[in-house]
Image (tube, rainbow, N blue to C red; front, side, top):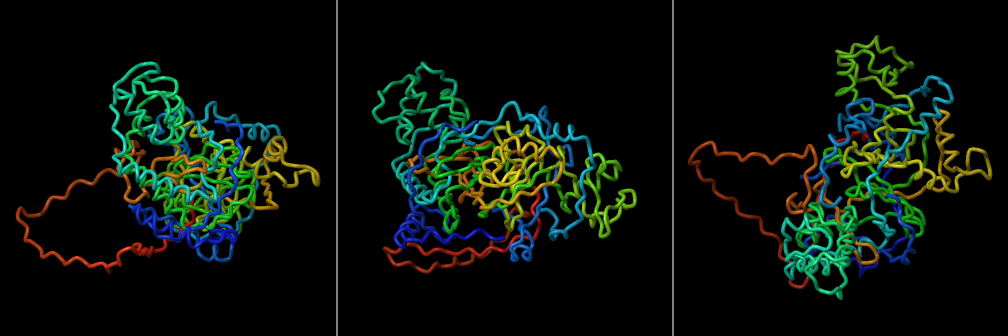
Length: 565
């Protein structure tokens, strides 16, 4: 299913012209159409909530064209080493940043439902009450949504403001020893810090001057940290100092690049919708213009990026099964079966053929035909998708779901999935999504926490269709502005901003597995023959006073493949 198109927002011509002109002036990529964005009423405050380009693989065109939901598959839960245990979380987690397919395979034909082996009801109930992690990573308590109908224009205005900062010289680089300063202590660098925080609106302009880290300055530092996805402790540290030292020019580019990515969006919004900002690794449930709950999430790693999506949540699945993608069968499961023939049984994975279930001992795991079988993991506590999946038809075949690897929700850096979004406290999000849906006991009943737990505890697959689908979008915003005028920033984990700032410029620490700088290539001869330089192509001149024309970039469609986790 393609992106959901909205007919609600007409595009004013003036807004389009202003947006394009401003993007051109700011040097933003403008390979898209501008969007019109009406301004909603300001949201009422609520109590704080608890704490080179990437090609995204798409599902086969036939399924998407027919409007079918592509049932994607998520790897690596069957491969125990891929999902770190709580004790291994520190070893797996990259250090925090300064701000926050596989073989192509067609959608598999419907295989016969294989129900998990019957067990004692109390055992199923025990599985459904899996304890949550003791500590979740902290997410922003700001009630303002990351994305609203006016985010595009608000972000453009913020980009213009930061361009003015850059033109005026920006702010001074702060010394490293400032990170060790404690509240109440003095430093000659404090006036420069105050100037920076005054420019960005974190410190009131009428704050008394001082070279001391006084309470108003501590509060300003906490506000700055909140805008950058850092713990808002008010204490200066290495990560906060790194974020403070990002130049105004880089911040302006983050804002303009993010605004450009919003151009052409037709997201329908509505009274209730869900937003996943990929660089924030967080999920927002928005109702009447306010974030009612923000959840910690695990999103795609840099080499298996979560794609941008605009669609609707249509169904909730309890106790989902997992169909293993061909790439995981080929690269992980077949090697495991060669070493350990009992691997599939241990991980509750069944083999399905044209006539039903196949005995794994009858398959030649050393041959080439082993990859042709469909492998399905039974529902249950150890299933890759956990106990809940949130279905949202889209051409990338991604979705949101639970996970058995909950220790990652405590990590500061949460870019570990294969494209889908794992949601911390997902049952609470499911409860919010199921509001207004008839409960399990017929008319008049609802899906509360007890009903959800009971529905999962019986161990049976259950699909619940939402009577009114909820709009959902996955966006990639490294810089954005909220209706209150505040600019927020996150690290460009996928390097999609153009030009992409270097890690040293953003204060980011490259994630594990990032490509190293290629070595310099030496010439084959000491004095190679000189080549005649080709004459540069001349661009068509643009009359003075007219905006630079938009250059449309043609992109080749990505290789057809089903999305995996």
